[in-house]
Image 1 (tube, rainbow, N blue to C red):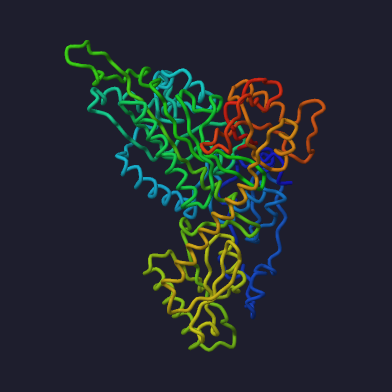
Image 2 (cartoon, rainbow, N blue to C red):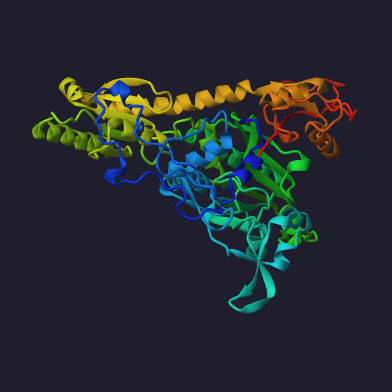
Length: 577
């Protein structure tokens, strides 16, 4: 069931990446492996692979995908873990390697990352942020300079202890994040208040050697991200940037990926190790009713500045006064390739991935149909030439377009393949369409059909893509809103959680209380009624939403009956990745 513990399911499927490269190879492009019979009617074209029989899964400990069919063989609602594995491999989003938790980002997914990078890079450069690159390796001495920080990452750090056949005198950490790699430079660079603000960003890879089950995109041992590190004269300046970055992160999800998020602040229990405070955007995976941390923007305060002795003379002091040293306020903020996995899980369906138009590497696929044994060579040439012309016309309008004019493949086979790959819009051109000077349209998100005059392609197709983008965000937003419930009493906490919801509750924001709630909502408390089909993991705080549903009333108590303290905020709780 989709409500099962997904990590456990991923473990059963060996989602840690132990398969050899090629495990996810899809159906061969060799014409002998394809369905040869042409579909005569468009209404039959969606039964694309009737002639293909699924092969039995081999009994090996690898995430092997059936290579005789491109179809998704399980329902997303019934087995999310197996569905996710099939989708990312068969849609050619990602490939496994022989290194557990490390993956190949194929062009279809890497293109999404490139567009995210371009979108965000433009915005941070407008804020005065410059790109840079710092080493992959961090000395043990530097990594350990901030105690809380290193304790937060200690279990995940990968260490290099040998170079060739020689043992290193001092082991080197492979960066899990770059605060400690960068701030020695900041101490050299920042000598005066005139050197502030200092704003640097990196686009790089990091390694966190987690021992939990890896889930491609969502939680891997190596991933791509950007990490910004800035230093400011005042707390107010730092705080302003923290929120501005958070807005940009939300825009990536909502404007590009069509994924709704909730902005908020992490509780002390959940904030970044060593941070003054952490702001976050939180997403939601409806299929399992879980929240997921989408991105974070941290105010580090002056902690790291003190550890690395980044200090300047106080510019507010008057002449003649003793010059006192002060510490800058620092921020760090990061956005990762986890976003691609979130997008896939939210929008995908039983046909495959569904990619929003703004990030799809192919926005429009043109498919020539209706060519049969009775079609003359002249008619065939006319159709194919018109297909090429449509592709060129739409490309000249700035769209990403491909033409599928492969011979020997039925239209239904082609349709299903492009649906699997998530292309937002399909244009079909057949003899009757050409007679009417139109193309037939099929939306990937809804399956809705229509037609567009050939004369208005350059105006109507972009409009339709914009509509698809907006509709995808609205659908996901409505679903998230429907599963965000207000709970005022503890007796309703677990049942509401088990209905695949995240919940807003009055809470004291205390760490021990959070831990108690996590334990008591995990189905381990004697006498507690728990749905046997519901996930067993407890709920944790996701964030203190920036937009509170209502004011906390005077004397209102924390929802935890074992707490007894007054509530401080409405806090979003949920089971999460």
